[in-house]
Amino acid sequence: MGSPVRPSWTDRAAGVEPRRDAGPADPLTILHLTHQGDGAGATISIAALAAAQRAAGHRVLVGCRAESLLAATAHAAGLEVEPLVFDRPARLAREIARLARARGVDVVNSHAARDRAACRRARLAGRLGAACVMTRRQMPRSLPLSVLLNGFVADRTIAVSRSVARALVRRGAPPWRISVVPNGVDLARIDRDVSGAQIETARVLAGWRPWRPTVGVVARRKDHEVLLRALPALEQPITLTLVGVAPDPALAALAAAAPGGGHEVRCVPFRPDVLPFYRLFDVVVLPSRREGLSQALLEAMALGLPVVASRAGGNRDLVTHGEDGWLVPPRDGLGFAHALTRLLADRALRERLGARARITARGRFPVARTAAATEAAYRAALAQRR
Image (cartoon, rainbow, N blue to C red; front, side, top):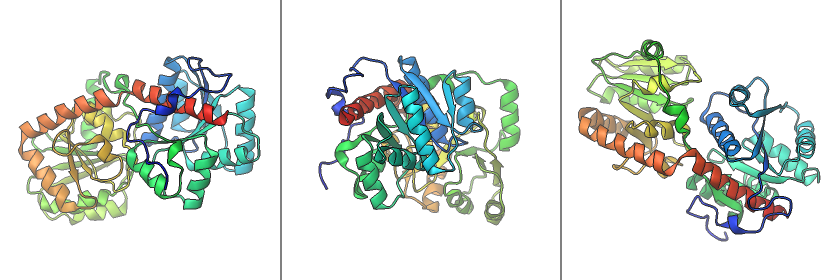
């Protein structure tokens, strides 16, 4: 299989001499690409990384759909936005190559499947001269042939967790071209003030009650049914607030099936600002069985909240069981119920886990560190391209 994937998320290849027109200290022109960019943690991660790169002195362009949340977020941050249409792969490949040439782009960094495919097409056609970096933010589901081809077409692949990197290698990606660079937390985003009106709105939407613990999940649909099926095993009544999902018949049926117990389930459709909701949660849970590295879980930890997550994917890179959070086997409803029962009954344990989580997230995952490690991967990609 070749050399093992580096366990560290600093890139030792950073010392390799880059190409002549981009020296080790020279600012880079970077083009980020994603066809997604809507209500998901990846959108927050890309926007935070782009802003941190600009703060470090680089020129940063964001290529995304004009109507996407990422476009609005990038505009608000003062970043340069390049509106792109992602529905025709051949045309997209030509447009990316043209944009890279016209703007003098040093590194094209794709973050999602359609733009990866377009970059691959442009590179194989000989149109894309800039270094090509592909960031894998989720556990890969691509066919091995696609992973293998992308692994050699890209000058560098960034995996957001060791689990993602290992999965890529199992599917054929060359491990010597992979850098592990986790998402980072933007402290300015989470340390800002929240108004009383915002808190009150969140209380209404979340179903918050002062006499009942509130357990929060901030994510798209990611095995939420595991928690809903676990509710009957919880003796203490709770409010389970699912932020980021609209109510649907399947969730409603599972919520109704929890017999008695006094539990309440609230679904809150996606909102760009979830900070007021974090102020209400006693515990944050992430039950997904496939996770690259959760931005929401990282932010909850940075805010000092105790977290319970599945022992899967990048959650294991973030959480050390019993030290700064609690890990449960994937899809183990009783395991989640027992973990919540223990944490909700022991305030001192919640406070200890939350305090350690805050230290872990802020000490190991600041966005400036993510930007520096990403730049090291870019420099290695430029050397590979040379």
